[in-house]
Length: 151
Length: 201
Image (cartoon, rainbow over all chains, first blue to last red; front, top):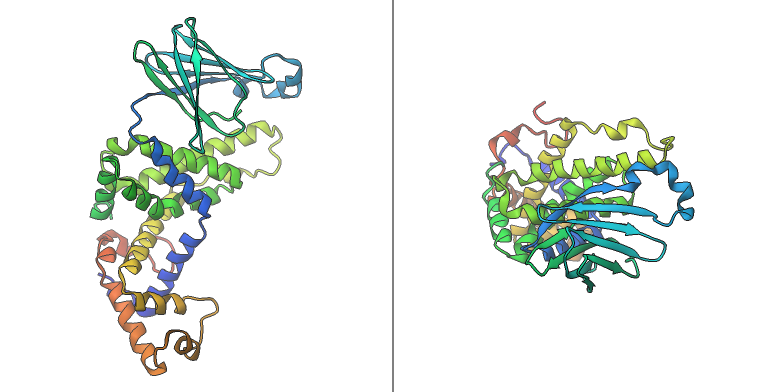
């Protein structure tokens, strides 16, 4: 197939191919490999539909004076998750309200669980300091997973 | 390359839950995703963020890719979109846009297409290299060192008689050239200048 490549060119091309691979840091590859943990998770994905950071960048300087630092909304076909970040914790509510369990998944693969009360409220405390995603399973069998959240 | 059976097989296996196939996909295409991030001049932190998103999106899409062989194109487009999202967000929050020149926002499609072709060629070359016998791998690896070693050094390290190095080099490169992995490169790919110039030029 490569009869048109003489030895010199082939060796140079091979060298370039090897260099391209060596230029990739190992953490970058690990991140990619670890992503497979999310394969076949039978949850509906909730999209980020609102992020107060997108709206009020000019308010960033004032954020220490406000009770809510950031508000986020994730929406799926069956429910929405409304999140409010305060100084110390992350408060949330499932809309329409219902009871269930909330899992907090970190990138390192750790999972912690918190309860969602009957009016759909929950608290994540402390706020994970690395990116995380939330998975919410309600009593009626709805199973929803958010995208990655960085606070 | 659009119908590279290796890629199709890897995607099919990974979507069936084969972790090893997934790792091979990541090994094969991480350079493509990474190179595109460097084109957008992202920080390590943002590069990790983009990489994370791209691979997670792929994990979710595995069973839904209509043409698994189009995976490199999908990865490149998705990576470029994620990079743009990060760069745009950074630009917005920096208000004055200091340190961001506009050209960063316009990594054009031609550049991305070039990256895809290069990535496919590089992946095929690495796969072909992996199929070589260990002796050939050792010799070619040594020949690729910078600076290149003398034949005397190669002899000292690999024990190959100096007079045989030239012929062995030629035989190893010939095996590489004829390997099934390189044969998978489609006809259109022949247009690429081997020195990494403009495709189709």
